[in-house]
Amino acid sequence: MSMDRRKFITKTALSSLATLIGVEIVFGKNMLRDYQPLALQGPDPFKLFKKDSEMIVLNDKPWNIEAKAHLLDDKITPNKYMFVRNNGLIPEEIDVKNWTLVIDGESVVRQKKYTLSDLKSKFKQHTYQLTLECGGNGRSEFNPPAKGNQWTIGAISCATWTGVRLRDVLEDAGIKNSAVYIGYHSADTHLSRDPKKEPISRGAPMIKALQDETLLAFKMNGKDIPLAHGYPLRLVAGGWPASVSGKWIERISIRNKVHDGAKMTGTAYRVPCNSVAPGTKVGDKEMCIIESMPVKSLITFPKSGAVIHKKDTLKIRGHAWAGELEVSNMETSIDFGATWQKCLLEKPVNRLAWQHFSTSIHFPKKGYYEIWARATDSNNEAQPMVLPGWNPKGYLNNACHRIAIKVT
Amino acid sequence: MAANKEFQKKLRKAERLAYFAGFLFVIAGIGGLFLLYDPDFSIFQKKQNTLLSNNIEIDEDRIENGIHVRTGLIDAKGLMTVVTNCTNCHSAKLVTQNRMSAERWNATIKWMQETQNLWELGSNQKVIVEYLVANYPQKEKGRREHLMNINWYELEN
Image (cartoon, chains in turn purple, blue):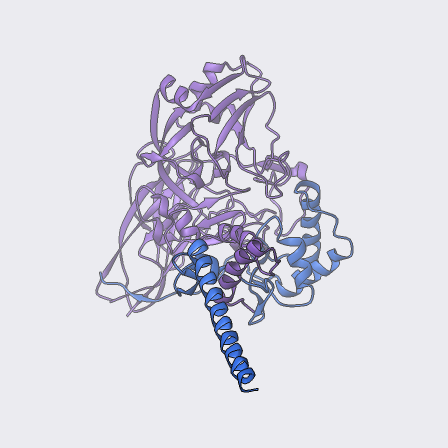
């Protein structure tokens, strides 16, 4: 039963009268006050985050939104098609002028604090295209099902990130020989709103932290990073689970041990050290931290479901990436993997950027086809056709992408 | 007597006039209040305050077509126990996306209690897990599913 709008407003007006004459009226001003937050709790995520209306909202608390393959056709992913992954609540207020980054930890030589303008003026700026894929991208396919947001294929992006090298900042503070890992701390809020809890505080071993392409970024695609993607300061570590690329960064600790922040331990962003049969219970001690993401690819044109005429050749295109590695070969199959056709594959713009592929496909006769895409990395590892090793949290599904085509 | 009658008549007339004046006074008063508090007479205008009106529901827990509208959860035995205990911190979408056995739901609840500030559920735990297993059952997907929900369209090449 919904309350009549006119009645409600009349009663609100009446309640102003009531305050004047000192009589209590039910459904007064208080109701209006109580209802205002609801409007703020349920805003339109597409407008709020400037996302395309074809994007899929998997979760609205916390916000988790993914793309579809055909939306990712751009060579550089624009914000409107970039997936959103949150473990907690997005910070409500960002005070850019007073934003500081603290470098601390057991293995820092001198604890240091930088304002955003310190970072921008003191260190050289670099720009890279960096591939960020959620560790759980593809989780929805695992059987038995894995716990968490059921990402299909759209938790992947490759945008241009501009910032300073994390290495330059860490070295400015000084890194002791005992350094093993870095761990980030962010301004987001735990879902329970417990201020003592961090929603996520992950990191990377020093070897990743010190890479040229590991940035403390303040720009995405040439503009301020959108709030949902980490404004005003984001760690960007391409090729690793995107959870390493912490958003709203306020503090980075140089640790003398593997960082033990939220979502570093237990089963989070970990897979069984040794492979297990689907559905196996795996103890925390048998789980190992995910580092580089595996080789993978997406056909971004055409959109699955295309009906074409037999005489036509179909031009297809997409992107391929391989975590820390490069993609060395790209192939497609229209006969369920029986035969493969080599694609034209471009070199990456820079290390850790996705690569673009294209090819023309000829269909021998009418019928239903699936185009399967298979990338091979520089270590000669290719994408599997079926699901890779089952793991309790459903990470690292790099099974080949498939689109459906009908030839009439 | 006639004079008295005449007086009574005048009195009634004066009374009516007084009532009328009083009525006019009240109307003018209300008008005055509007001028003070709502000079645009906005309460009589139809298209306004749409943001508010869209969000005003007296019955937060109404059911439509077997679905609890506010959360999207299936209306079945245990619904409100799930709504009350499982949608405070996170969206119900996180629940409905998942398909787990009773054992794994219980393990998930334990994990949420140990690390995510979920409270003790007592006898409600059984109600919640039974609801989830019955309404969001696991589906056997094998090692790779068929491509499904294909929206066919003509591609101009």
